[in-house]
Length: 612
Ligand code: G6P
Image 1 (cartoon, rainbow, N blue to C red):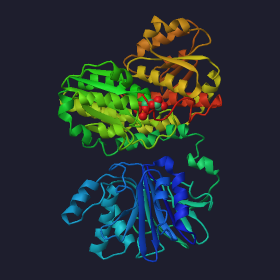
Image 2 (image 1 turned 120 degrees about the horizontal axis):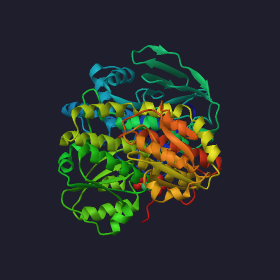
Image 3 (image 1 turned 180 degrees about the vertical axis):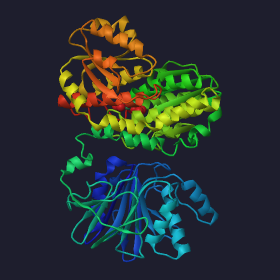
Image 4 (image 1 turned 90 degrees about the vertical axis):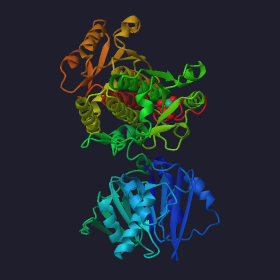
């Protein structure tokens, strides 16, 4: 993620930039920095931690400037630290740059630059791109704009970058592909930012820069060009939004925004890893530890909350595709019951925050006993990520809503790729199915988008059942953990008592609860359990329960029996939870909202539980 801000004009740049960065902190806040130009002097200040910590650290420094760029970071390449914070300076010190995105081919470019004698002060892909631009500028004896254009033609990945240099002391050069950039047009001044929230108090006229465009911005001038150096006409739009709404990207709540971000966050998670054309899955953390996984006698998954549900789905995946026995443990129970851990056991820790105390201490004690620890974590550089011997980040971006949504689907995407990669290496997954599942996984972001296209039916269902005092969620196979997650989401957001159960096990207890008032949510997509779940739906209908079904688009049998239906596109059952969970996230959101609760900060809950 990361947030970026730039300013060139007649005001003091620093206060404008810092205020803007604070508004963008939802995009990440592990370190921040600014670069300011004053009388041909480039001053760069950066600091690990929140923007306010950087602000405090520069008290008394030379902050006078009418042009500057600033960045608040959510680490991807390189741990959060002062030296990995942006802005970065080129080898000569003449260029300063901030970047939001990921340069996928940075390793190869870095090798080339190292061979030419370049040295690097940080671990970031950003510094590699910056020195690459400087190298081109030097070798071609051209201006910064031209050097940038040449560099970007070789770059694979996503970026929004802002560059300044004392050579051209009133100009910011920006470029974008994949990561957002808005330019605010003032009188004799321009503002740049990742979204409009840092801009709106100064001007309502904005230009949204398109992919593959370069912008040259001076106080009185805005030039847009494509990578072919052809001028583009800026399309000026009028902002018609309240500041508060913009901070949430126009969504009423962070939770809704995060649900809607899932096509992008799942795509980001797969990007550069799932290489369908070559049939490869590139995951360094697995690659480096492949032997540990292939020879694992047993895998123990340790997690809490929603992450634990992702672990349950991983159990089904890994046992089916890799034929390795898997146990899924609540971290708090695992820690305190003196578990048997043998040589050859692999522990997978799943955590969005990477800071959950129960998970952390469980891992510490397992590590002491000699277990190999693999982390599936969202927050880069977090405690669990650091403690793990290897790992894979979910790249879902900062999750602010307390109830986890996009982090869950990020975890499922990572765990699916892991199972595919290990199963293939171990020889338990035949090549045809491996390639088919890769292709299916690649289509998931588009299919999530389809579900999110029109959510009015789910909102209607939420309104209809919002006053129920209990809910039952049922599913079988891969959809059983989805039923658990649906029940947890509803409890968290709407404070309605909800239970998740394996649909068949329902006969051994919960069926006694069924009457005409009880809504029963069936996660009943087309899979190998389909016929069985049809019978379970009939059992509920025979007792006058109200059935709400998550069904596969085109299915006619389940919709024919259910009172209400939420459709999802078809997918292989191993990855279907990435789709079937989305309507349940929305259902809980709309019920909580209809009941007037604070869905982003539900009572008694916390985003990161750092106490045992
Ligand atoms: C809290 C959060 C949940 C989360 C759980 C585990 O309970 O409210 O959304 O699933 O912690 O957190 P983790 O960061 O370890 O995934």
